[in-house]
Length: 291
Image (tube, rainbow, N blue to C red):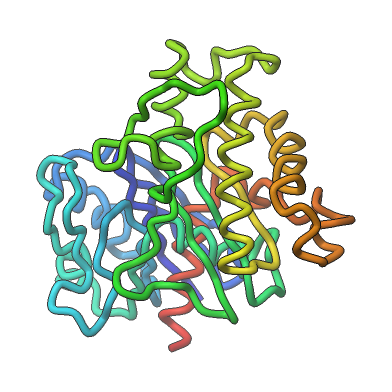
């Protein structure tokens, strides 16, 4: 089986061909420019490659509801030229094959469930913490959608006692994304995260916010594994602090050994690493082929 994958990011597109085991055979990337120019490059990559199905994990907001008249659209994004763009419809003009379309984080969650750190589990949560914050959830074997799709980066959090930063979200200011995304770190401290020392007070505050959000999602979704990806989470020293604050927040209310005794293997970095998004799109393609 030859599967096509598109990780459609607001900054760059990653395209790949792989198989049903999640193995990447061929991969390329290019900057996200106008829809027409970007899709021309996508098609130039896939033309003549005889793929059996295609998965698209996209930046959003998107419409993933197959019963909706705007299914397959990138909807209200502020990215110039991409608002209300029918990306699936355009791809269907070129390839008459099964396609699956979802958020990039839902794709990454599915990829980790099929091929990564949540293999064999019917429940998992994937959070990406970087330029923005988003979450994808699998509950009882199914990706969570609902009215639109989860926007886990926009939940309100209790402020850290030492934090006077107004927040960086244009919609909510001091939501999870507004307080803990990469741009929020840079705006608060005047430097990019990768320029801050491991003992900088930024990281204790960052871990405090991430753990607070993780604790909320544990109580609401009860995932069997939590995977934290994205550029911010490349700061490996964050993980012990996040785990410690999560335990403090839950205060032994969730009586499961996975959390109480083995939290190091419960809150983890993506096994698929930087390929979580594109392999997630492969997983979407596999799902589309099997439906």
